[in-house]
Image 1 (cartoon, rainbow, N blue to C red):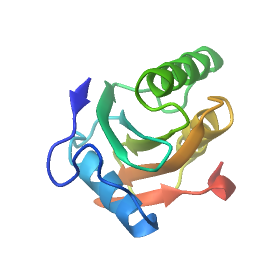
Image 2: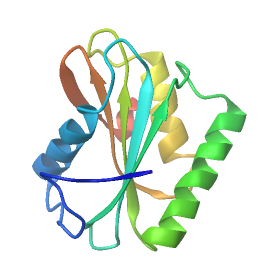
Image 3: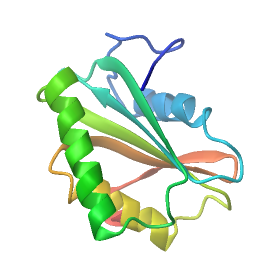
Length: 138
């Protein structure tokens, strides 16, 4: 696991959707062009940056049931240890254009429905853009 550095520091509060998108853009800077990855970070119960970042390389186009279960366990473990009552922010980096794909929807569902944790935001970084995925996109 890594820790955040500028422009977000542990303890910084994410107060609105614009700041959440800014955080997602910052996290997306770590994605490698042409690769599929997932970057996770956590906010505490007051929406303050915890400072824990987990990059996951070589993610599949869509998670299978076992991967979704494992992901949910991981999200809960980090929340329990570092941010009880908090939430997760996820950025899926992938090649291609920024249009929402079936794989994006599958990751969105896995993060939101199967993890059992509060999701503050899910984003896709593709085609030179970072865009939020909404509940409707799941």
